[in-house]
Length: 460
Ligand code: NDP
Image (cartoon, rainbow, N blue to C red; front, top):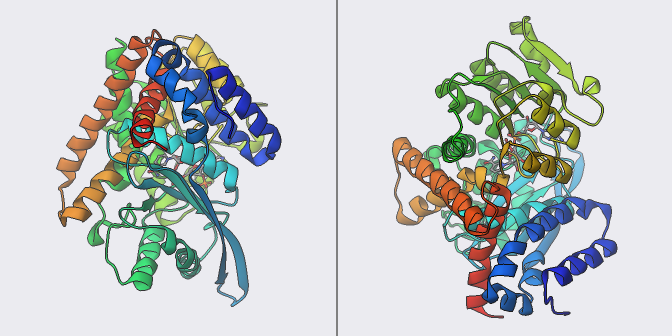
């Protein structure tokens, strides 16, 4: 394999790989390029990392250890055979067992999972915990399926996946379309296949091995990170401020919950079909009922709150999203990748938004990131700001291994401390490398450095 001797060579390598691949890898290359541009100051300033480049450290980092792809055959409620594709991308285990969520969504393909797995390596490194990076999932769509169908799919999926995972090998968790219900079914099937009751999945329901606070962890962590970043950057607190949030799933609703607890007025949420705007602050109990219990469309919110407004996707501004057109102090994209475009970033800047915190993975397009970094907006990148979920997954692994159960308050305190540590580390790394205030570069450099150090120490 060709040696990568400098950042320029590395970029050339990526360009070459890109030509050889298909469009579904676009998001993966987007994620890699961002990291590569960010770590340039590290390569320039530190001889050790220049040497590491001679060891093909970048080439090794951007190539998954393995991509497991398998067929999932299951019977629907009409007794008809359904076939889906399952994946697990085990990307890098330099720091610990592979760790990362499972996504069940019709858009899932190998490219999306490579992007998510790659991001996960650096995110997990930033937590300071002994966790490697991975991601997996399927093109199965849980929407509109009965509980029984979801259970049968999860069982069929695990019949193949169980061969590749284990508490010291690879510990999957949830992501889009995979919550406590799906993790429960997956765990049950793993147990039936292996007879082992062990910490092989995180995000389990709390009554059989799950950590308290895992469902809240990512959303709460996003807000703890934002609070610290605003403090470090000398900005006003979130109390009494108008905030906009996208998404209405696990991350978004728990981010809204913590924002409301801090006295912020959170006026929006979205799903794949449209946006709710409620100037008095969104009704969280109703949202939880709609999304967690009934799995209904947000459009139903209007029935209970006719004074709020609903904008369907078809009425979003060209090239943008209605939610980022609403003036706010702080914005929180918490739905999915590339949901905040250049058009949206310009609107946020124009409306005087002070901070944008990425709750979803890579929600901002490359152009949007550049626009925000050039502006006065404090931009908190996903791999740092949404690391609270995997941090509490790490705590769940510790509790499972030690046969312990920590209280909600204990986990919350540890989560807050972890998010504040990550924020301070990212901020000080950015300062150290001459890009003060740039949390994107700070996160990429700090995460890369920890993984690269381990890879160098472990040899080839
Ligand atoms: P959920 O499945 O609970 O919710 C996803 C939300 O995003 C839903 O509101 C969904 O709308 C919306 N959505 C999904 N796809 C699209 C799309 N293509 N366009 C517009 N909206 C869309 O997922 P999570 O809340 O768990 O995850 C959200 C994001 O956070 C993802 O990027 C995930 O990778 C990331 N993340 C999640 C973590 C976790 O702990 N759960 C940890 C770290 C990151 P609808 O209801 O219509 O489907």
